[in-house]
Length: 356
Image 1 (cartoon, one colour):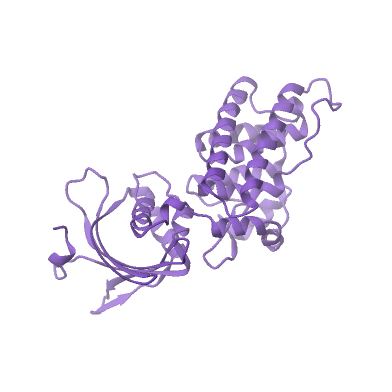
Image 2 (cartoon, rainbow, N blue to C red; image 1 turned 30 degrees about the vertical axis):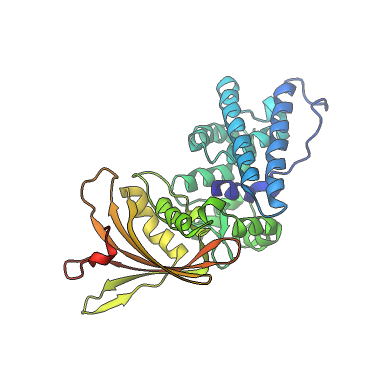
């Protein structure tokens, strides 16, 4: 779902006047293909605007996923038949529409990677917008777990502050942006929260209903979102949606000089610090036992876990207990905080917290 939310960030830039296919254009332009691309762009934008008009629901999300799937499949056919549909083939607006459809193909990163060198070749000939190219370069890099070059990809943190995703050699970013026809990053980030205020409302309110409908569901979602094989990107936006803004993740760890301390991490700290290792090494964590206490809308859970690099590993490399505080707001469940301690030889998990 949340790969969809990140695609909403390009809506305002993507809006162009959808003109009639019968409009006068140079004879070399393939008017039928141009009209098809403009129609697909129109459907792309309609589906996303519908979700931005209010709190998104699963029907709207499913519609966007279906639209993107159809468009990705068709773009594969178009690229195979024509190469990249540039200005000479489909006009400036048609080329922009083609870029938008690939930019939003986050569920088909292979298509994005396939199209990027074609777009780069066309840009070198002046047949596509360098601005569009910058956005796709950043999208491919972010979706591949790399830092972006131009700062076009941004998000709202748990405090509701708009921030660019990590940028490689950020000191030189404005020079690179200028080369691609982009305004300085500081100016972009000043305008970003105003232009995309509706996107912020959607992103900060969006979640999978099935993830937060019960205590069982939100705990299952927590373990699911951090687990996966080596090389698989995690749905970090999905994880963010489970936590109340300002939530803390607090591992209890031995100190070098003796005793124990606590590391207080925000969700973003966890994503930044632990995310790359989880994605590169492979990590599967599961709940093996649980003890729950509830008073009104407040729930405390001792969730015993074990961790493996692969699901088929016979022996876990770690075990421990996650102590979760949860809250029900009348509509959905939230994680308020997680305190965690690992099992050690001198600190075995008591029998009452293990499977019976």
